[in-house]
Length: 474
Image (cartoon, rainbow, N blue to C red; front, side, top):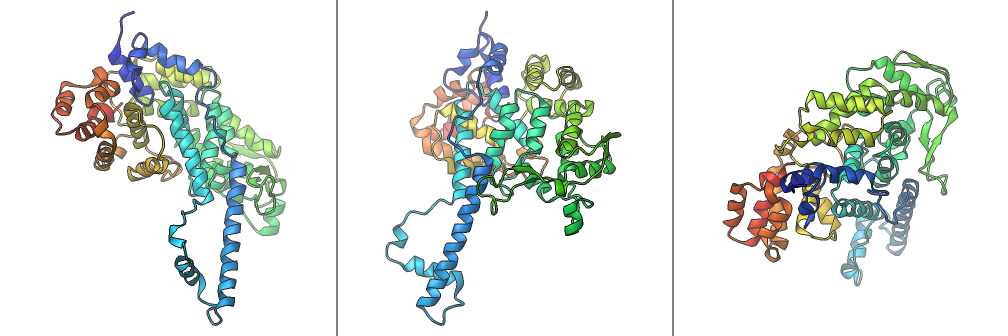
Protein backbone atom coordinates (compact mmCIF):
# COMPACT_ATOMS: atom_id res chain seq x y z
CA UNK A 1 0.00 0.00 0.00
CA UNK A 2 1.38 3.40 -0.99
CA UNK A 3 2.27 5.72 1.87
CA UNK A 4 0.06 8.78 2.28
CA UNK A 5 1.80 11.05 4.80
CA UNK A 6 -0.28 14.12 3.91
CA UNK A 7 -3.57 12.37 4.71
CA UNK A 8 -1.93 10.91 7.83
CA UNK A 9 -0.99 14.38 9.05
CA UNK A 10 -4.49 15.63 8.29
CA UNK A 11 -6.00 12.70 10.23
CA UNK A 12 -3.89 13.42 13.29
CA UNK A 13 -4.99 17.04 13.37
CA UNK A 14 -8.64 16.53 12.44
CA UNK A 15 -9.51 13.46 14.48
CA UNK A 16 -6.88 13.66 17.20
CA UNK A 17 -4.72 16.16 19.03
CA UNK A 18 -2.03 16.58 16.40
CA UNK A 19 1.12 14.59 15.61
CA UNK A 20 3.88 13.53 17.95
CA UNK A 21 7.38 12.57 16.86
CA UNK A 22 7.10 9.79 14.29
CA UNK A 23 3.32 9.54 14.32
CA UNK A 24 2.77 10.77 10.75
CA UNK A 25 4.99 8.02 9.36
CA UNK A 26 3.47 5.46 11.73
CA UNK A 27 -0.02 5.76 10.22
CA UNK A 28 0.89 6.78 6.65
CA UNK A 29 0.20 3.29 5.27
CA UNK A 30 -3.50 3.47 6.23
CA UNK A 31 -4.55 6.74 7.91
CA UNK A 32 -8.27 5.95 7.96
CA UNK A 33 -7.68 2.45 9.28
CA UNK A 34 -5.43 3.82 12.02
CA UNK A 35 -8.13 6.25 13.15
CA UNK A 36 -10.73 3.48 13.21
CA UNK A 37 -8.36 1.18 15.10
CA UNK A 38 -8.33 3.59 18.04
CA UNK A 39 -12.00 2.79 18.58
CA UNK A 40 -11.25 -0.90 19.08
CA UNK A 41 -8.42 -0.82 21.60
CA UNK A 42 -9.57 -2.17 24.99
CA UNK A 43 -9.43 0.39 27.75
CA UNK A 44 -8.27 3.24 25.56
CA UNK A 45 -9.12 6.65 26.90
CA UNK A 46 -9.42 5.63 30.54
CA UNK A 47 -7.45 7.76 32.98
CA UNK A 48 -5.55 5.56 35.40
CA UNK A 49 -5.14 7.92 38.33
CA UNK A 50 -5.84 7.93 42.04
CA UNK A 51 -8.59 10.51 41.90
CA UNK A 52 -11.56 10.83 44.25
CA UNK A 53 -15.12 10.09 43.26
CA UNK A 54 -17.46 13.03 42.88
CA UNK A 55 -19.03 12.28 46.26
CA UNK A 56 -15.66 11.98 47.98
CA UNK A 57 -14.51 15.25 46.41
CA UNK A 58 -17.68 16.97 47.52
CA UNK A 59 -17.26 15.76 51.09
CA UNK A 60 -13.56 16.65 51.19
CA UNK A 61 -14.25 20.21 50.09
CA UNK A 62 -17.11 20.57 52.57
CA UNK A 63 -14.88 19.39 55.45
CA UNK A 64 -12.04 21.64 54.31
CA UNK A 65 -14.27 24.71 54.24
CA UNK A 66 -15.86 23.85 57.57
CA UNK A 67 -12.44 23.41 59.21
CA UNK A 68 -11.12 26.61 57.63
CA UNK A 69 -14.11 28.56 58.89
CA UNK A 70 -13.75 27.10 62.40
CA UNK A 71 -10.04 27.91 62.43
CA UNK A 72 -10.71 31.50 61.40
CA UNK A 73 -13.32 31.93 64.12
CA UNK A 74 -10.99 30.42 66.72
CA UNK A 75 -8.18 32.77 65.70
CA UNK A 76 -10.52 35.73 66.03
CA UNK A 77 -11.46 34.65 69.55
CA UNK A 78 -7.81 34.19 70.52
CA UNK A 79 -6.91 37.56 69.03
CA UNK A 80 -9.72 39.24 70.94
CA UNK A 81 -8.67 37.54 74.17
CA UNK A 82 -5.02 38.56 73.72
CA UNK A 83 -5.84 42.16 72.89
CA UNK A 84 -8.83 43.48 74.88
CA UNK A 85 -10.77 46.14 73.04
CA UNK A 86 -9.94 44.66 69.65
CA UNK A 87 -13.00 42.38 69.46
CA UNK A 88 -14.21 44.06 66.31
CA UNK A 89 -10.89 43.94 64.50
CA UNK A 90 -12.03 40.98 62.41
CA UNK A 91 -10.14 39.15 59.73
CA UNK A 92 -7.89 42.06 58.74
CA UNK A 93 -6.22 42.17 62.18
CA UNK A 94 -5.79 38.40 62.25
CA UNK A 95 -4.21 38.40 58.80
CA UNK A 96 -1.85 41.23 59.76
CA UNK A 97 -0.79 39.34 62.88
CA UNK A 98 -0.09 36.27 60.78
CA UNK A 99 1.96 38.28 58.30
CA UNK A 100 4.08 39.76 61.09
CA UNK A 101 4.70 36.43 62.79
CA UNK A 102 8.30 35.10 62.63
CA UNK A 103 8.84 32.94 59.52
CA UNK A 104 5.41 33.75 58.10
CA UNK A 105 6.83 35.09 54.84
CA UNK A 106 8.98 31.98 54.35
CA UNK A 107 6.21 29.42 54.80
CA UNK A 108 5.04 27.79 51.53
CA UNK A 109 1.53 28.70 50.53
CA UNK A 110 -0.99 25.97 51.21
CA UNK A 111 -2.88 24.82 48.13
CA UNK A 112 -6.58 24.86 49.04
CA UNK A 113 -8.29 21.48 48.78
CA UNK A 114 -10.70 22.55 45.99
CA UNK A 115 -7.79 23.87 43.94
CA UNK A 116 -5.73 20.72 44.50
CA UNK A 117 -8.59 18.46 43.42
CA UNK A 118 -9.04 20.59 40.29
CA UNK A 119 -5.32 20.50 39.43
CA UNK A 120 -5.10 16.73 39.94
CA UNK A 121 -8.07 16.21 37.63
CA UNK A 122 -6.63 18.65 35.08
CA UNK A 123 -3.27 16.87 35.11
CA UNK A 124 -4.84 13.46 34.49
CA UNK A 125 -6.98 14.84 31.68
CA UNK A 126 -4.08 16.66 30.03
CA UNK A 127 -1.76 13.66 30.25
CA UNK A 128 -4.41 11.43 28.70
CA UNK A 129 -4.63 13.77 25.69
CA UNK A 130 -0.87 14.30 25.33
CA UNK A 131 -0.07 10.58 25.64
CA UNK A 132 -2.85 9.30 23.35
CA UNK A 133 -1.91 7.58 20.10
CA UNK A 134 -3.98 9.62 17.69
CA UNK A 135 -6.36 11.00 20.29
CA UNK A 136 -9.78 10.34 18.77
CA UNK A 137 -11.25 8.84 21.93
CA UNK A 138 -9.93 11.70 24.04
CA UNK A 139 -11.38 14.17 21.55
CA UNK A 140 -14.72 12.41 21.97
CA UNK A 141 -14.43 12.73 25.75
CA UNK A 142 -13.86 16.47 25.35
CA UNK A 143 -16.68 16.80 22.82
CA UNK A 144 -19.28 15.03 24.95
CA UNK A 145 -18.09 16.73 28.13
CA UNK A 146 -18.78 20.05 26.40
CA UNK A 147 -22.14 18.81 25.09
CA UNK A 148 -23.22 17.81 28.62
CA UNK A 149 -21.24 20.57 30.28
CA UNK A 150 -21.11 21.54 33.94
CA UNK A 151 -19.24 24.43 35.54
CA UNK A 152 -16.42 24.06 38.05
CA UNK A 153 -17.49 27.32 39.67
CA UNK A 154 -20.88 25.81 40.51
CA UNK A 155 -19.61 22.38 41.51
CA UNK A 156 -16.18 21.11 42.49
CA UNK A 157 -17.11 17.77 40.91
CA UNK A 158 -16.49 18.74 37.26
CA UNK A 159 -13.43 16.55 36.80
CA UNK A 160 -14.99 13.56 38.51
CA UNK A 161 -18.19 14.14 36.53
CA UNK A 162 -16.27 13.85 33.27
CA UNK A 163 -14.64 10.61 34.42
CA UNK A 164 -17.84 9.09 35.81
CA UNK A 165 -20.63 10.24 33.50
CA UNK A 166 -18.92 10.97 30.18
CA UNK A 167 -15.73 8.95 29.71
CA UNK A 168 -17.23 5.46 30.22
CA UNK A 169 -19.91 6.04 27.57
CA UNK A 170 -18.21 7.83 24.64
CA UNK A 171 -18.11 4.54 22.72
CA UNK A 172 -21.30 3.19 24.25
CA UNK A 173 -24.99 4.03 23.97
CA UNK A 174 -26.16 7.62 23.99
CA UNK A 175 -29.05 6.66 26.28
CA UNK A 176 -26.61 5.47 28.93
CA UNK A 177 -24.54 8.64 28.74
CA UNK A 178 -27.67 10.78 28.87
CA UNK A 179 -28.90 9.10 32.04
CA UNK A 180 -25.44 9.16 33.64
CA UNK A 181 -25.01 12.87 32.90
CA UNK A 182 -28.45 14.09 33.96
CA UNK A 183 -28.51 12.11 37.20
CA UNK A 184 -24.96 13.01 38.20
CA UNK A 185 -24.65 15.22 41.30
CA UNK A 186 -22.59 17.77 39.35
CA UNK A 187 -25.36 18.28 36.79
CA UNK A 188 -28.07 18.36 39.45
CA UNK A 189 -26.18 21.11 41.26
CA UNK A 190 -25.15 23.06 38.14
CA UNK A 191 -28.65 23.26 36.70
CA UNK A 192 -30.37 23.69 40.07
CA UNK A 193 -32.37 20.46 40.07
CA UNK A 194 -31.05 19.56 43.50
CA UNK A 195 -33.34 22.31 44.86
CA UNK A 196 -36.32 21.52 42.61
CA UNK A 197 -39.39 20.39 44.57
CA UNK A 198 -42.78 19.35 43.30
CA UNK A 199 -45.29 22.02 44.41
CA UNK A 200 -47.87 19.37 45.30
CA UNK A 201 -45.38 17.00 46.90
CA UNK A 202 -45.16 16.56 50.66
CA UNK A 203 -42.03 18.72 50.79
CA UNK A 204 -43.51 21.29 48.42
CA UNK A 205 -46.66 21.72 50.48
CA UNK A 206 -44.81 21.86 53.79
CA UNK A 207 -42.16 24.29 52.55
CA UNK A 208 -44.21 26.22 49.99
CA UNK A 209 -41.61 25.45 47.32
CA UNK A 210 -41.89 24.76 43.60
CA UNK A 211 -40.09 23.31 40.60
CA UNK A 212 -36.97 24.62 38.90
CA UNK A 213 -37.17 24.23 35.11
CA UNK A 214 -33.48 24.66 34.28
CA UNK A 215 -32.43 21.02 33.96
CA UNK A 216 -35.52 19.97 32.02
CA UNK A 217 -35.18 22.89 29.60
CA UNK A 218 -31.49 22.33 28.90
CA UNK A 219 -31.97 18.59 28.42
CA UNK A 220 -34.59 19.27 25.76
CA UNK A 221 -32.91 22.24 24.09
CA UNK A 222 -29.22 21.40 24.35
CA UNK A 223 -28.73 17.74 25.20
CA UNK A 224 -31.37 15.97 23.12
CA UNK A 225 -34.05 17.39 20.80
CA UNK A 226 -32.73 20.85 19.97
CA UNK A 227 -34.59 24.14 19.63
CA UNK A 228 -38.11 24.07 18.22
CA UNK A 229 -38.94 20.46 18.97
CA UNK A 230 -40.77 20.91 22.27
CA UNK A 231 -43.15 23.30 24.03
CA UNK A 232 -43.11 25.14 27.33
CA UNK A 233 -45.71 22.67 28.57
CA UNK A 234 -43.23 19.86 27.85
CA UNK A 235 -40.57 21.67 29.88
CA UNK A 236 -42.87 22.03 32.90
CA UNK A 237 -44.11 18.45 32.77
CA UNK A 238 -40.58 17.09 32.34
CA UNK A 239 -39.34 19.26 35.22
CA UNK A 240 -42.03 17.72 37.42
CA UNK A 241 -40.82 14.20 36.60
CA UNK A 242 -37.30 15.29 37.66
CA UNK A 243 -38.38 16.56 41.08
CA UNK A 244 -36.85 14.54 43.88
CA UNK A 245 -33.61 14.01 41.93
CA UNK A 246 -31.17 15.60 44.36
CA UNK A 247 -28.02 14.91 46.38
CA UNK A 248 -27.34 13.94 49.96
CA UNK A 249 -26.03 16.91 51.98
CA UNK A 250 -22.40 16.50 53.16
CA UNK A 251 -23.24 18.40 56.35
CA UNK A 252 -25.49 15.63 57.64
CA UNK A 253 -24.11 12.61 55.77
CA UNK A 254 -20.35 12.27 56.19
CA UNK A 255 -20.27 8.88 54.45
CA UNK A 256 -22.41 9.52 51.35
CA UNK A 257 -22.86 13.29 51.20
CA UNK A 258 -22.67 14.68 47.68
CA UNK A 259 -24.07 11.50 46.11
CA UNK A 260 -27.30 11.11 44.15
CA UNK A 261 -30.51 10.35 46.02
CA UNK A 262 -34.15 10.23 45.02
CA UNK A 263 -36.22 12.06 47.61
CA UNK A 264 -39.75 10.74 47.24
CA UNK A 265 -41.33 13.39 49.44
CA UNK A 266 -40.05 16.08 47.02
CA UNK A 267 -41.35 14.33 43.90
CA UNK A 268 -44.42 15.79 42.20
CA UNK A 269 -47.17 13.14 42.39
CA UNK A 270 -49.21 11.98 39.43
CA UNK A 271 -48.69 11.25 35.72
CA UNK A 272 -47.04 13.76 33.40
CA UNK A 273 -47.37 14.23 29.65
CA UNK A 274 -44.19 15.00 27.72
CA UNK A 275 -44.16 15.25 23.91
CA UNK A 276 -47.66 13.82 23.80
CA UNK A 277 -46.87 10.70 25.82
CA UNK A 278 -48.19 10.10 29.32
CA UNK A 279 -45.75 8.82 31.94
CA UNK A 280 -47.28 7.30 35.10
CA UNK A 281 -45.92 8.26 38.49
CA UNK A 282 -43.29 5.58 39.02
CA UNK A 283 -41.08 7.65 41.31
CA UNK A 284 -37.49 7.88 40.17
CA UNK A 285 -38.31 5.78 37.10
CA UNK A 286 -40.67 8.41 35.71
CA UNK A 287 -37.93 10.78 34.57
CA UNK A 288 -35.73 7.87 33.51
CA UNK A 289 -38.50 6.77 31.15
CA UNK A 290 -38.67 10.26 29.64
CA UNK A 291 -34.89 10.30 29.17
CA UNK A 292 -34.97 6.89 27.48
CA UNK A 293 -37.55 8.12 24.96
CA UNK A 294 -35.63 11.34 24.34
CA UNK A 295 -32.50 9.32 23.64
CA UNK A 296 -34.27 7.48 20.80
CA UNK A 297 -36.08 10.47 19.29
CA UNK A 298 -35.32 11.31 15.62
CA UNK A 299 -34.80 14.98 16.56
CA UNK A 300 -32.13 13.91 19.05
CA UNK A 301 -30.40 11.85 16.37
CA UNK A 302 -30.28 14.83 14.05
CA UNK A 303 -29.20 17.25 16.78
CA UNK A 304 -26.32 14.99 17.84
CA UNK A 305 -25.33 14.26 14.24
CA UNK A 306 -25.20 17.96 13.41
CA UNK A 307 -23.03 18.77 16.42
CA UNK A 308 -20.58 15.93 15.68
CA UNK A 309 -20.28 16.93 12.03
CA UNK A 310 -19.83 20.59 12.97
CA UNK A 311 -17.12 19.76 15.48
CA UNK A 312 -15.05 17.52 13.24
CA UNK A 313 -15.75 18.76 9.71
CA UNK A 314 -17.16 22.26 9.16
CA UNK A 315 -19.19 25.05 10.73
CA UNK A 316 -21.86 24.34 8.11
CA UNK A 317 -21.59 20.56 7.85
CA UNK A 318 -22.65 18.81 4.61
CA UNK A 319 -26.31 17.85 4.76
CA UNK A 320 -25.63 14.34 3.45
CA UNK A 321 -23.11 13.75 6.24
CA UNK A 322 -25.57 14.86 8.90
CA UNK A 323 -28.27 12.63 7.45
CA UNK A 324 -25.90 9.66 7.33
CA UNK A 325 -24.85 10.09 10.95
CA UNK A 326 -28.43 10.59 12.13
CA UNK A 327 -29.54 7.43 10.34
CA UNK A 328 -26.67 5.44 11.84
CA UNK A 329 -27.64 6.77 15.28
CA UNK A 330 -31.23 5.56 14.86
CA UNK A 331 -30.31 2.26 13.19
CA UNK A 332 -27.90 1.26 15.99
CA UNK A 333 -29.97 2.35 19.00
CA UNK A 334 -27.67 5.32 19.59
CA UNK A 335 -24.43 3.32 19.49
CA UNK A 336 -21.86 6.13 19.60
CA UNK A 337 -18.99 3.94 18.44
CA UNK A 338 -20.95 3.11 15.29
CA UNK A 339 -21.86 6.76 14.77
CA UNK A 340 -18.18 7.70 15.10
CA UNK A 341 -17.23 5.00 12.60
CA UNK A 342 -19.77 6.42 10.17
CA UNK A 343 -18.14 9.83 10.61
CA UNK A 344 -14.60 8.56 10.05
CA UNK A 345 -15.54 6.52 6.98
CA UNK A 346 -17.43 9.37 5.31
CA UNK A 347 -15.71 11.03 2.39
CA UNK A 348 -16.84 14.47 3.60
CA UNK A 349 -14.76 14.06 6.77
CA UNK A 350 -11.57 13.77 4.72
CA UNK A 351 -11.83 17.02 2.80
CA UNK A 352 -8.20 18.20 2.47
CA UNK A 353 -9.20 21.76 3.38
CA UNK A 354 -8.55 22.45 7.06
CA UNK A 355 -11.85 24.21 7.66
CA UNK A 356 -11.99 24.22 11.47
CA UNK A 357 -10.02 26.42 13.86
CA UNK A 358 -8.70 24.43 16.79
CA UNK A 359 -10.20 25.51 20.05
CA UNK A 360 -7.61 26.85 22.52
CA UNK A 361 -7.35 23.68 24.61
CA UNK A 362 -6.88 21.51 21.50
CA UNK A 363 -4.22 23.91 20.22
CA UNK A 364 -2.30 23.78 23.51
CA UNK A 365 -2.33 19.98 23.55
CA UNK A 366 -1.12 19.94 19.94
CA UNK A 367 1.76 22.22 20.93
CA UNK A 368 2.74 19.92 23.82
CA UNK A 369 2.62 16.86 21.57
CA UNK A 370 4.61 18.46 18.76
CA UNK A 371 7.38 19.77 21.03
CA UNK A 372 7.52 16.73 23.30
CA UNK A 373 7.25 18.88 26.42
CA UNK A 374 6.12 16.75 29.40
CA UNK A 375 3.05 17.73 31.40
CA UNK A 376 4.58 19.27 34.52
CA UNK A 377 3.38 22.79 35.19
CA UNK A 378 -0.37 22.16 35.14
CA UNK A 379 -1.25 25.58 36.63
CA UNK A 380 0.43 27.28 33.66
CA UNK A 381 -1.42 25.05 31.19
CA UNK A 382 -4.84 25.72 32.71
CA UNK A 383 -3.89 29.37 33.08
CA UNK A 384 -3.15 29.56 29.37
CA UNK A 385 -6.52 28.01 28.61
CA UNK A 386 -8.20 30.70 30.67
CA UNK A 387 -6.21 33.45 28.98
CA UNK A 388 -7.33 32.11 25.61
CA UNK A 389 -10.99 32.15 26.54
CA UNK A 390 -11.59 28.46 27.22
CA UNK A 391 -11.07 27.99 30.97
CA UNK A 392 -11.15 24.31 31.89
CA UNK A 393 -14.62 23.14 32.98
CA UNK A 394 -15.87 26.73 33.10
CA UNK A 395 -18.15 27.16 30.07
CA UNK A 396 -19.88 30.55 29.79
CA UNK A 397 -23.34 28.96 29.70
CA UNK A 398 -25.03 25.53 29.71
CA UNK A 399 -24.61 25.50 25.92
CA UNK A 400 -20.88 24.94 26.43
CA UNK A 401 -18.04 26.44 24.44
CA UNK A 402 -18.81 27.29 20.84
CA UNK A 403 -17.77 25.03 17.98
CA UNK A 404 -17.96 27.84 15.41
CA UNK A 405 -14.76 29.36 14.05
CA UNK A 406 -16.00 32.91 14.64
CA UNK A 407 -15.94 32.38 18.40
CA UNK A 408 -12.17 31.82 18.38
CA UNK A 409 -10.82 34.05 15.61
CA UNK A 410 -10.91 37.16 17.82
CA UNK A 411 -8.61 35.43 20.30
CA UNK A 412 -5.72 34.85 17.91
CA UNK A 413 -3.84 37.83 19.37
CA UNK A 414 -3.85 36.19 22.80
CA UNK A 415 -2.85 32.92 21.14
CA UNK A 416 0.17 34.70 19.67
CA UNK A 417 1.15 35.84 23.17
CA UNK A 418 0.98 32.26 24.46
CA UNK A 419 2.88 30.94 21.42
CA UNK A 420 5.58 33.56 22.02
CA UNK A 421 5.83 32.51 25.67
CA UNK A 422 6.22 28.87 24.65
CA UNK A 423 8.86 29.86 22.09
CA UNK A 424 10.83 31.87 24.65
CA UNK A 425 10.76 29.09 27.22
CA UNK A 426 11.68 26.07 25.14
CA UNK A 427 12.40 27.23 21.58
CA UNK A 428 16.15 27.69 22.02
CA UNK A 429 16.74 23.98 22.64
CA UNK A 430 14.55 22.71 19.80
CA UNK A 431 15.32 22.37 16.09
CA UNK A 432 12.46 24.24 14.37
CA UNK A 433 12.83 22.22 11.17
CA UNK A 434 12.45 18.97 13.08
CA UNK A 435 9.40 20.28 14.95
CA UNK A 436 7.93 21.46 11.65
CA UNK A 437 8.27 17.97 10.19
CA UNK A 438 6.80 16.44 13.34
CA UNK A 439 3.88 18.83 13.68
CA UNK A 440 2.90 19.39 10.06
CA UNK A 441 5.02 17.32 7.72
CA UNK A 442 3.56 17.53 4.21
CA UNK A 443 0.73 19.79 5.40
CA UNK A 444 3.20 22.67 5.70
CA UNK A 445 2.92 25.02 2.75
CA UNK A 446 5.93 26.48 0.98
CA UNK A 447 5.07 29.85 2.53
CA UNK A 448 5.07 28.40 6.05
CA UNK A 449 8.38 26.61 5.50
CA UNK A 450 9.93 29.79 4.11
CA UNK A 451 8.61 31.91 6.99
CA UNK A 452 10.08 29.56 9.58
CA UNK A 453 13.39 29.28 7.72
CA UNK A 454 13.73 33.07 7.75
CA UNK A 455 13.03 33.43 11.48
CA UNK A 456 15.64 35.43 13.39
CA UNK A 457 15.94 32.82 16.15
CA UNK A 458 14.77 29.37 17.17
CA UNK A 459 12.26 30.76 19.68
CA UNK A 460 10.78 32.97 16.98
CA UNK A 461 10.67 30.03 14.57
CA UNK A 462 8.70 27.94 17.07
CA UNK A 463 6.30 30.82 17.68
CA UNK A 464 5.70 31.19 13.94
CA UNK A 465 5.14 27.45 13.60
CA UNK A 466 2.52 27.36 16.36
CA UNK A 467 0.74 30.30 14.73
CA UNK A 468 0.86 28.95 11.19
CA UNK A 469 -2.53 28.40 9.51
CA UNK A 470 -1.84 24.69 9.11
CA UNK A 471 -1.17 24.28 12.85
CA UNK A 472 -4.02 26.47 14.08
CA UNK A 473 -6.56 24.70 11.88
CA UNK A 474 -7.67 21.13 11.57
